[in-house]
Length: 438
Image (cartoon, rainbow, N blue to C red; front, top):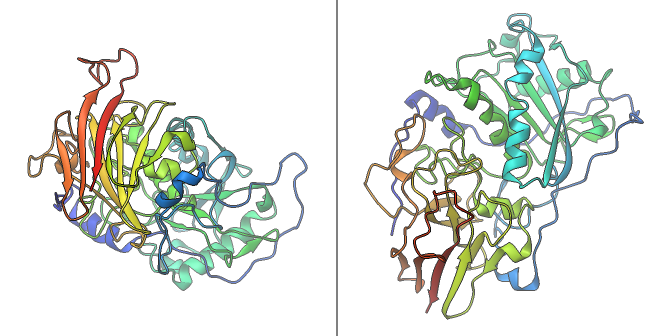
C-alpha cells in the first residue's frame, strides 16, 4: 500500500515557504559573556536523554548510513537539548526600532505559555518538566532595525541572522547567565516581517557545538518565532502557540516531517508535520526517541513467523505503545494505537496507525511516511489546516497492511475486550495486532 500525496489545506504561499524552512545550525563567531553562574540555578543537563532499551531492541535502533543533519535514527546524537527531566528554557521577547513591541512583552509570552509547558507535560507523560524562564520580562530591543538584518524566510543561515544572534547575546548577557539554560526561545514581536499566512519566518538552529558562545557555553539550541499562526478560524487563542512546541522539537533532535508538497506524508499525526489547526501529538517513534517510553513499552518485532502484540492508546500513560519492525539497519515499520485523547484532539477515526521510518532521509525530505487504510477517501475531518486525506489513515479491526516484497503482514484484530469502543471513555482500551514475517 502506498500513502497519498496530495496538497495540504495550507495556502500555496505558505507551502512555498515551508519547502525552504528546515532546522538549521549555528555557525557564527563567538560572543563574550560575563562568566558568572547564578547561585540559585542549577546547571542544565548535557545532551539528549538516554534511551530506554534492552538488548532485544538492538535490531530496531536504526541509524543513518550517511551525513543526515536531523535523523530519525535512535538514539539521538549528542549536541541537542535533553528531553527528559527538568529542562530550562530561556525565553526572550525581542523587538526592533522599525517594529516596536506590540503591547506588553509579557502578553507575547502568554501567547505560548503555559500552553507549551502543558503540551510537553501531556505528550511526555510527565517525563519532561519544561520550565520557561524570563529573566528579562520586557522587550529586548535590538541595535539594528529589522529591515537592516535582512531576514526573509529564516533560511539559509545568512549574514543577517549571524548579526542578529551576536546582537541578541550581547544585549541579553548583562542580565542573563546562559549557562543556566538548556535551550533558548526568541519570541519576535509579531509586527516584524510579514504574516505567517504569507511567509514562514520561524526557524530553529539546533545541535551544533560550534554555535556562538555566551558565558562560555554554545548557544546551540535556539528557536525563533515570528508573526502569529492565525488561520482566521477563531482558534488562535487555542492553537496559535503550537508553532513553539514544533520548533522546540528540533532542539530535542526531531526533523520536519512535512515536505515541499506539504503534510501529505504524515498529515496531522505528528506536530513535526503540521503545527497549524487543532492540537495533535507526536508519533510513538518520537516518544521513544525522546526518552518518554520505557523499554517494556516498545516491542522489537524481528524474526520469522506470526506473533500477536497488545497496544494501549498512545495518549494514555502506561502500557505497551509501539511495535517496530526493522527492514534493515536504517528503516522499518512502526505500529501504534491512536485515539482522540490527550494532545490528539483532532483524531476523527481511532485505530492502528502504521508508518515507515527512514533514518537516511533528512529533515523535510520525508523521513516518515504514514500508510492510508482508506486511500482517496477524502478523510474524516473538516477542521481547517489539517491534511484531511490522512485523517482516517488508521487501520480498523479486520483490516490488514501488507508489504509483499518484505513478506510482512500486519492485521488488526481489534479490542482485547469484545465490543469495547476506544472512544467510549470506559476504561483504557487495548488493541491486538497480529504480525507475520515470512
